[in-house]
Amino acid sequence: MIKVKMNNEREFETNFCGASQGILWIRLMDDETTVLEAATIFSNQEATKKIFVVYNVETSTMTFEGYTELITVQKEMEGTVLVALRHKS
Image (tube, rainbow, N blue to C red):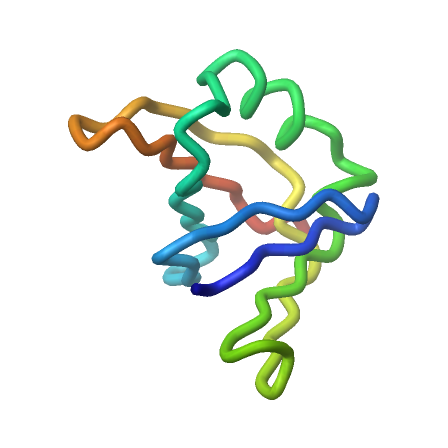
């Protein structure tokens, strides 16, 4: 499982996290996280200024910096929450 670690030490499990054309997409696998909670967490610019994605038990890590503008949070049909952040220069 892939883990997303926020700048404020919060962690989430995900099966998808990637950036394209200035947008970072994160799918939260925690069934207990609501859209409102995700919106509150990911609208915190200090928490999102640096996001670490850890693959394969910390043997491979990718860092996304500057994705601080929350664009959307939505509940998907599978029950997961999808978050989109825009890169702010």
